[in-house]
Length: 113
Length: 115
Image (cartoon, rainbow over all chains, first blue to last red; front, side):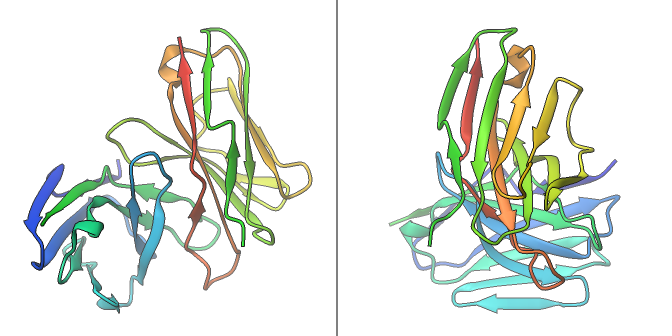
């Protein structure tokens, strides 16, 4: 069955450092992968999308890589700030009419001042 | 503009009762999704609408769950004979439809508690 694993349930880093979150998957061939941010009591908020034929995407302080051979995505937040503290969710999407997302369980990131 | 809205924000019901959860998507978004999220887990897909029709309902756990979107906008998720295991946050999301529009916009969710 399809399985998505995100590294450690919680990650604590010091302000200003780079946070690196991992998403590994098995038994899946996604057409694209997305990263979402979720704050307590709120719905997920879309951050970045990377397609199967792309290696890397950047948006401001965020960077995502996608290795379909390793079946892994890495999500980086550079120059992290306490406001970046949240749960980050990895989600895989299919192609064609299969538009629903399959989510990992998330990594809770805390940026310490 | 307005985002996805969901009502009620919280719903407490007794085991065996019927509940309806409502979702108002972003205007113009033809795709609408329902997910369920348990504590400490990521959202789990339930059903996806394209327009008025359910394009994929493979995530509905059993026949107690049903969803409609009669006019292609507002959607209602209906749960019959609720069980304690149905307790979760029910999230609705909407998106444009097209090859360049895969990101989904989520509402704040409805927290359902079955006692």
